[in-house]
Image (tube, rainbow, N blue to C red; front, side, top):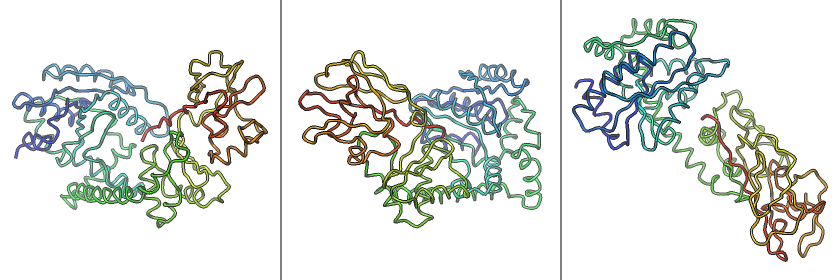
Length: 437
């Protein structure tokens, strides 16, 4: 079977996608993939084909690559989108560039589009070795997945079973021209060291080392799939409870997790957290044990790369984005007929008749007392305890004041409604806008 036939067979399940987008760096691998697809598009009825080039601006020589990519795409009759990104400074330039690149891909994909990446079998073997040396678990050792969701579309690596040597033969046969990244030969980068020093040594002793390592990655991918299935089963009971229902944050009940073995706890929680944050290494999972085993009256926090896991009573809550930013001092509500937006804290609205003013929204400072229908004056702290409001929410709950009189507490049973006045105060909290996953 030719490389083109094999590629067409791999892509058969995706021929109903709205478009195929090729991540085109201008290097050998993506040049071969784009050339193959452009030729197939002339012979078969395929989705619309386009290319996307991400320019990181990290080295001067790369400034010429967008023009090279444009010339290649023009010759093949393929539209090209060039996206320029800013790579933030950090400990790992490779990781920062990768994050910026995938963020650009995600934002560029329209609904039901397929992004095609040209990573091959040798890349897969290097990835497994690299992660093995970093002490990765099954999730990491599964290396690069063949397919996964990305933004509104999907990502697919159709060449993962193809060795680089086969791509080189194809490029030579069709006299393709590509760019060479000068940093690819610098051994100070770990991946380059594995590619140029370690893999050749392994293959000189075991000629099929690359294929065998890639096959192991596939086996580990299956194992990861089984662990994900087990995690979904273990999380089912923990995800059913939500209290209070108006709080739009990811949450888990703690009790069902506590019934699992320690290994299944880590597996289930890691599967859940992977939606929101980069996961910690093995040594830092002690943070989970500390949070899990804290006394019932405590409010422990486990700080992770892209947010925080809070425990309130017998529930776990994931907080990120606006929930980790300091809110202001409240605001005067000059037009209660309209929603009032609160900086980093959602908005409040009325239903029913609006009470007489002047009105303002403030936040809890301690010692507040309010009149509750049929119960007289009640301490706000006791009302919050009765309603089971998590500790991290209490300082954010909008309090409605008329001059110095506390009229209502948004969303709180009994304290958020005035039956005699015929109105109710509603708070729409900020959503948990997530970081990179």
